Amino acid sequence: MAYSYKNSKGVTYYLHYKDVTLRGGKKQRIYFFARDVRSGALDDLPSGYEVMETKRTGMPVLKKA
Image (tube, rainbow, N blue to C red; front, side):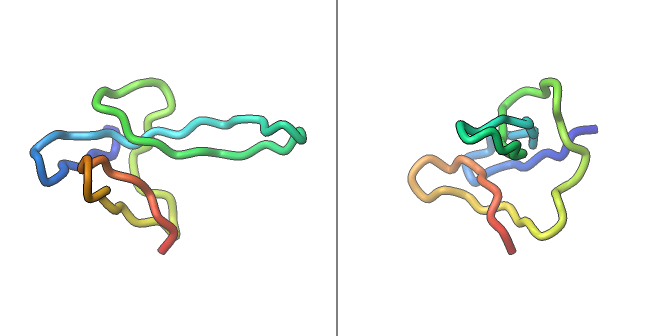
């Protein structure tokens, strides 16, 4: 089951990841939240991260702890 987070507005978001290649050729993993479960969904938070909520939109984002 994908990691879910319910924001202050009552909307549920699911945590995902994607491996991307930057312009210089370096590979990096990005984390993002979506309203539905897609491929790349994570079951738990990555170690060293915590969930924060943006003040204006209530969208959850990951922040290094």
